[in-house]
Amino acid sequence: MVIDRVKVISDLSQLTVSGNSDGLIPSYGVLLQQLPASFWNTFSERMLQAATGDLRQAAEVLLENAAAECGYHTGHGIVNSKEFEAVVAPMIDSHPEDMLHGLYCVFSSWGWADASIVDLDPGHRMVVHARDYYEADILSASAPCAFMIRGVSRAFMDLAYGAPYPDGLGRYKCTQTMGIEVGDPHGEFVVTPL
Image (cartoon, rainbow, N blue to C red; front, top):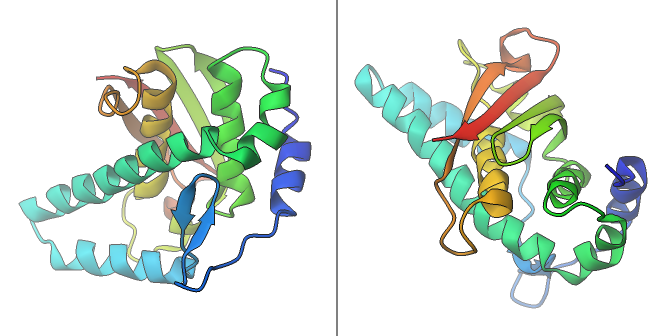
């Protein structure tokens, strides 16, 4: 890997993004929003608490699928953005593997999670460790529940190894094997083909 993670995160963290007159933040090739992590955690917690019995599993699937949709389209915008082109693209030596590492640098620079790829078998398996992520603060967690990282991780694999955008979503699944929210030292996410 030739991606200098520390430099990319530092450089991207220093970019100034601001809202336009419509309150939208057009940056990284997408429209961004800036809401506190507690908003998203409260949303997830309330949904999970309201879904009892068989509905809980359906709610978890919906939360992960929403993150996958967001991650797929946002990830596509990111890798085609002027910001990614300026900061990450000059370091890409092996495509799409370095692109994946770059996407996790963006992910980390935005404050979603301090996440990185720790093992990658191109197209077959990816293992991501997250040392910090906002879903770790979900108070009602009785099982790993980092739905956003699960969905985004499988979406990033879809972008790298699925059919060309926009037809590649849904080729991979992600299993969370560890979670800070249940007392583990970090979150672990394993992405494999369906």
